[in-house]
Amino acid sequence: MATKEIVQHVIDAFDNNDVEKILSFFADDVKWTMKGSSVTIMNGKNEVEQFLGGMEDVKMVSSTKDHIVVEGNTAAVDGLVQCKDKDGKDMAMYYADFYELENDKVKRVTSYIVDKKE
Image 1 (spheres, one colour):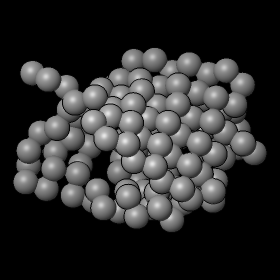
Image 2 (cartoon, rainbow, N blue to C red):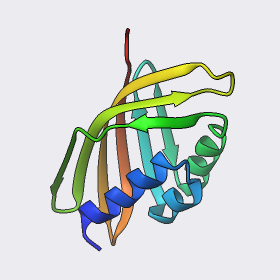
Image 3 (tube, rainbow, N blue to C red):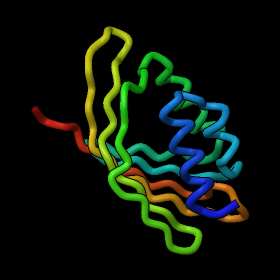
Image 4 (cartoon, rainbow, N blue to C red):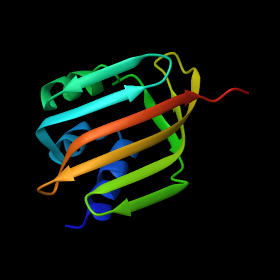
């Protein structure tokens, strides 16, 4: 499967809150670094699963994919994500995600997240 196709599957799984599908595309030793107002680093599928499981109350409302750029085994995606938390509060964040693949699995993700200001 091509890098763009794999990343598109991952994005679709995020859009559908499908943690199992997301994890199916991640290597066992994936490293995910999220940078924004703080830095979160997850090492391995288990830590990613715990993180995503802790976000069960956050539901995706919509997302854009303004750009998807692929070069070899690396892809970059950016856009705007809109969600609702467990209390129904709206959240909106700009994001830029960089995916690095190895053997058709996501080996590394670096995410930059900025809250959208009204």
